[in-house]
Image (cartoon, rainbow, N blue to C red; front, top):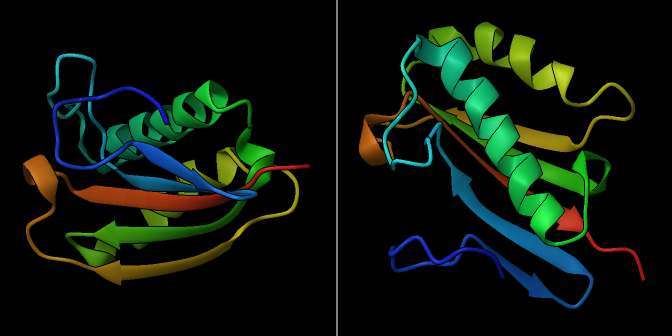
Length: 118
């Protein structure tokens, strides 16, 4: 597990050789959403994911599956633009869907499942 942010869920939970990451939004250390729109939010999310993985001894290459939630599906291309930068090699499986009312008023939320090598 990683940091306790005061929410009623864990940032990540390991079960066997799988690490489940909670949905990440573009949150800054002061618990506010980064300004700058969907591109800035997506980049912050991906950096947050890297941080959570790193705290668990993993990297982006260990991600097997991501789920992307967007408050506006017309932003799918913009999210993909930033998302792709973080997966230069083989891409993880992924689902994406529109969602109304994401946490903290976020435009994007991404959750991931990672493989923990033996």
